[in-house]
Length: 102
Image (cartoon, rainbow, N blue to C red; front, side, top):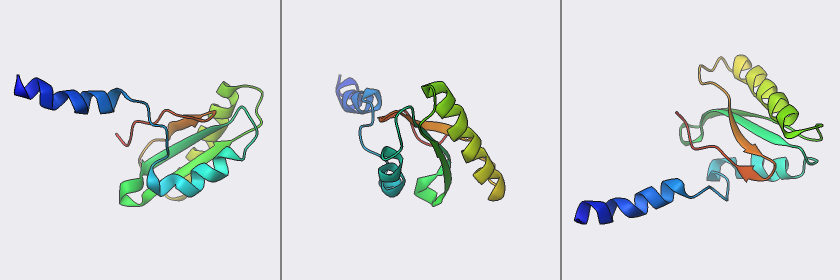
């Protein structure tokens, strides 16, 4: 029974959506929120290791187009830095959907 109770807060924390950006992405997040609606932010790498790039887009016709554009920009920056980590969606609109580096 103790194991189940100890695991409950961890399970709850994992199920709770993130409402604030990763601390190392705070400046990127502030700039991202100034973009026009239908915006998206993508990330490649790991902020904890200071080895990451982002791409963002705003003012697109749809959220899907914004995400495609953000992933494309992230991919170009990833290639410039010769990173192996794939670009992943970080946020769409004002909702953070990223679960951390794989």
